[in-house]
Amino acid sequence: MKKVLTLVAAAIVCLGASAQVQFGGKVGFDLTNFWGENAVHGMKPGYQVGLLMEYKFTPTFAIAPEVVFASQGGKGDLIDIDGYKAINTTWTTNYINVPVMLKYYATPSLSIDFGPQVGFNVYSKYKMKDYKSVDIKDETKAADFGLGLGATYNLTNNAFVQARYTMGMTNAFKDEGDKAKNSNIQIAFGMKF
Image: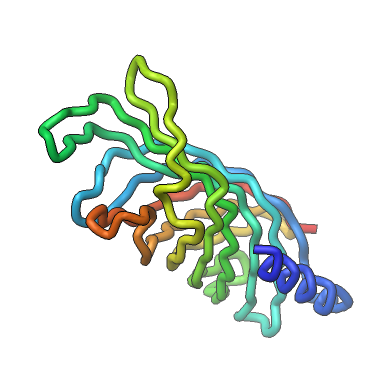
């Protein structure tokens, strides 16, 4: 993770001298769940907060790396091999996500955003109703890879709103029989400087 953050910081410093570079931050609301075979599909509300940089290398194209903390996971009822049903179970799998979005400006104010994302697992737990949380970080993978697609609308030169869907491409859990991948719908508000 340190290498990725160092590369992002180096890119920001190298491009910082250009007038076409903007820095900023964003906060937002997420609806997350898992998708795939054996996945629990209930939506869990979450949040995100992060920093971003946008380098506009032509009037219509830009690249925008971000570093975002996102509270992800899912909700639902789990039935194990012995038939035991865990009712009202919530999984929380939080990540530091590093998406790198390629932005196509369809208009001066609206961009279509697409790109890869790598997420670094900060902590993972699950909680059943009326019971304490259980740490499951050892059962979840340290990194998550996904693809994001969305749009950004610039309200002013500095303020923007953003909508994005990120689909996980790798299993979130180490158990190969548990084919559950992350899924994240994001709505965010941000400022660029």
